[in-house]
Length: 144
Image (cartoon, rainbow, N blue to C red; front, side):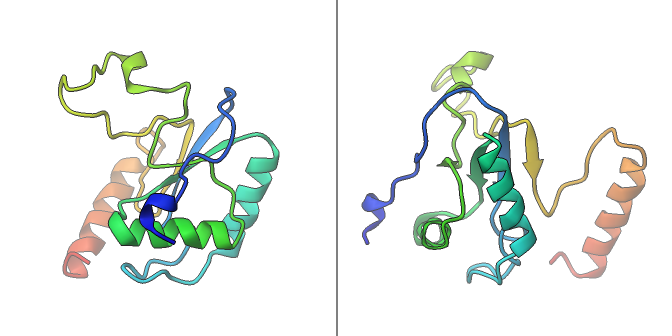
């Protein structure tokens, strides 16, 4: 299958809650550029959210053939998602004052929930201690 054949929008565009889900480290264990072992608990949750009407964004830093491989992985396993690295149709950058070309494209995806293995929730009690702990661990691992 050629890259141009991969279809990234697969469902309707009715307004519904949105979740952006990272691929490496969440949907699969982090093994980039390879595709890691599937995280079955996350897949069960995505199926539940999809059935409950959530709009699911596959949210990843992968590009080119690595992105194509991730999308095909999702399709082949019937893991539900609605779009890839793109806003839901009702959350377009222009709606928030970002004009095309003004400062470049708005690359932060708009979602109600972000599921990412490298996230620390700002504002949640203990977030500063968690940030310092994670930064320290990152340095101890040599930036990996």
